[in-house]
Length: 401
Image: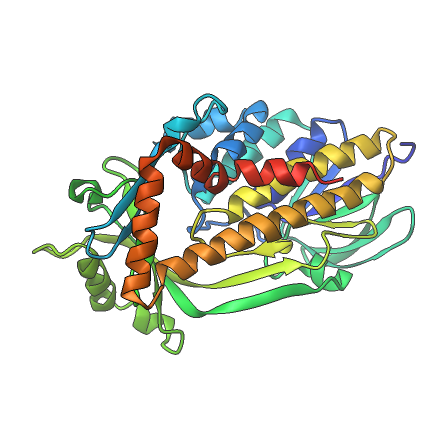
């Protein structure tokens, strides 16, 4: 490829940083623009599936994540009374992945690792406090308008990657529709140092309940015993302040596990959940990845993982094009990753939520009983984990031409 204009990447979250690393490894010039003055402290995502760990390993990221991350070999789906528990052992996948476990590490602990490696390898133009305000494109490039320190300039780029989150400016300016919906609930996240493992909870649990389903998982903290984070739905008509009042959060934790003394809540927050997918992941010389291309509910831990998968797939194809192959590869990126999002991430996360919130107790018990039978059968459990760990979906999507 004769032109050497850089690839501009909007967003220095996990997806944008992964794109920058993957492109620099192929000697492709990169300008990374992040609107915030520094890395953001996102408290939501924090579970990494085996294929994601495999993808990041060649960059030295996984090795560093393993220093503080928590390996989670077993995970559960259980009901609120706890009398029905389906437990799955990722050790059954040890013959096909070097990482037969999930790894729990918060997003805000991942991005500093990515940024540090990117800086150490050199060659990337990294700009914080740099807001992309618009762009125009031609058949040969993209003129990207940016604003930094109150000054405006234009960067002439070969390609523009929008990895700037669910409210992506790049996606909006490109005119790509963001199809889908927003779930009615507000979600509350509360983290405590209470060790739920003492009550038999695995380090990753999905909890079925007609009125207050949720997800509970353990994350590393400044020291033992780590943090346990509970995410549960709440009334969207109430204010965040009301939902986060100490007695309200305490009551939710007590409904999960009752104990005589109050819970020590380290932090708490709220967020809304969306199920949306961009109509296309490519619009000319504009490419979308991560939350800019898709959003989903957290049940299954697919969002952050799929963003990393986007980045690796996209930058492999962009690299081949950069070094002389057809730009049709970028259309293939859009087909493969959009299919993976729709057929796996969206379908599975929606199905997980519907099962967790099933209002008919008899239906919910029947589904959980079926999952218990699946977990008890090694062949069926293996297939279930190939699906839930994103391995099967990745394989199917990568076979698309």
